Image (cartoon, rainbow over the protein chains, first blue to last red):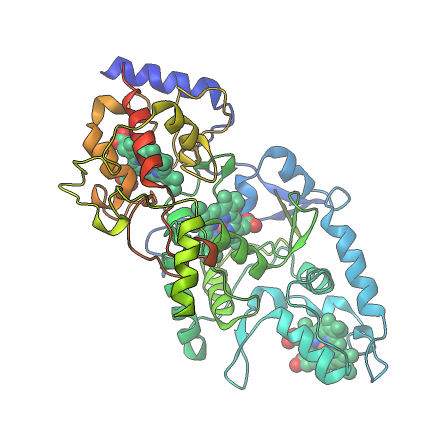
Length: 279
Length: 150
């Protein structure tokens, strides 16, 4: 019996050449700056001891693309974002740059979002940008996960690259966070799976050709080889829900915002990697 | 009323058509995780079962299971145990139970139920009210799994 198992295991290893068992030990440095891709899990995560960036689960080729900004195709869109921020739009005749002269002033913002504002609403980076467009520029809001939004949020997120994720989850944020946690563990769709089934219980294993990560969001917007563009975080949630044959919530919905806060908290201590590269 | 009609229509053209003699998804009887009687009243076709096992829109079993009997497909998943020699470990009745609704054998498992009558939360509209596999496909896959012996 033991022999039979050993033979079976050998047979499997021989054709599954890409078999891998966990996150790898590689270190992420971008142009000499070391970016930490793991951290002790926050106390609220009962089933996980260490949190890892999705970068640690990608192939060496994909990893390499993120280690040099010239090889990182996300930067094509960062450049688009910079031009958008310099362009006048809307009835007030202003560009983002009219009021936000130095993009560096946005350093630290990404690590703290989403957050609860003075009116008690949970707000995301996309909403902050659209508030400036509609209320300060007299311009139309951008589509929540559209190409203008991902380009500009990549520029803003990049200013925090290397800073540890540190979102508030207590006080006025607590009820949003709890809703997010509920959604994370809820089984949905015809296949009846929760985010946790894949990203908490099975990270490190292969699901067909995909190496399952913890589903961290520290690298968004993310450049994906699959569609050769930047992808917003709600758009990714939506893709995972459709894969389990579930009706996704809308991008920008209360549900996805709560889920985003909860997931950000599960990445506490991971560095912002915007714009990350994934397959 | 209109909706009911529509639903009936959808069910008729859906891929998971319930043939008159099939056990309805909600009526599948489990005993200790196994299903004793064939869902179609007949023995399945192992060749068709192998195809449904591989097909990503049907069983998609390779997403989670390695299977040395299918070396021509690359990338076998690791989420579940390898299915080599699975017929040595489980009877046909147990395999039918596992494929129909693995939660009856392994509570809280990640393995989806392929033939049950429960309506999951927020199913995409095109899948609402349907099972992942038809009764025939379940029987075909069970017949295929039975070939995985020494």
